[in-house]
Length: 334
Image 1 (cartoon, rainbow, N blue to C red):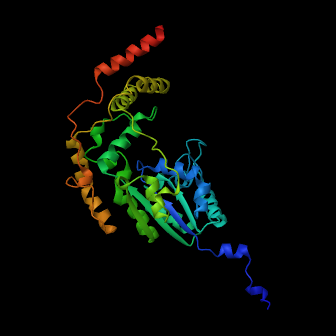
Image 2: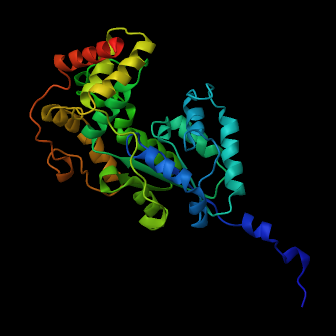
Image 3: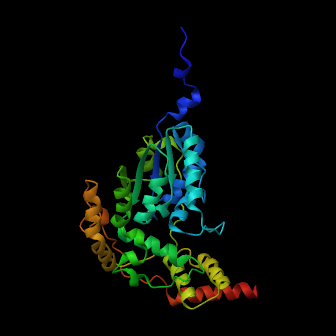
């Protein structure tokens, strides 16, 4: 018995008929994003075999950051250009259309703080059947310290303010700390399935595999990267910028501080200041978790927000600076 030609579907047509779901991981910063992205990059073939495409479109540093750069008008640190949105979203749509799996996953922590207009612009141009947004948040005071470390340690970025100047309004350090303000732009615009993860619940890779319907051991375990530096190193870098050292000198100071002060403890923020941070964002986080039918875990009284028992201490002492100076003089006379 023969079939009518118009009823016969080729394998290519059948593949095109597969419903494509796009998972968009929006961050936030300092929630294990780089570790996750590197793992998915290094294991993209294994992911594809499990039914998830991690496309090479919009590529920067293991992930699809160039699409986020385009949405925010940010400059690509390597290519030194501001990516063109039409070109970037077109590249993503092409990657989705050519994917051999029904699930496609993209990630960039720069998505997190996109404006409502930028998110709508993305939604209007995506050519996919359905979308699932994934956001990860973290205990605000520890995220605050991690973000401060990241900004203060970088040479030649002009960032030199004391950490305490941001405590009363944490969002002035980084807009990602306004969890609900950022996530609501995505939730309201896409009106689709959305998952809210907590950094403290487990490793970023394991949690993301679970969202994708995969087992936690589906990919090799990845070690965390972008670890925080000692508090003394952070303070040395802040001081080097505050005193106006040249960019070249700042880089030399960074190298020397890491050599001499590597055994110093992590950055210290007092329990009093941590409480201020938790209180200042508590109402917004109540609203965030309520929107997902969850209880806010980031309150002063919650188990997850137990405050450290560390006694008050300085991040850097005059002795540390003298040790650095002595090491530098010894190296010059050696």
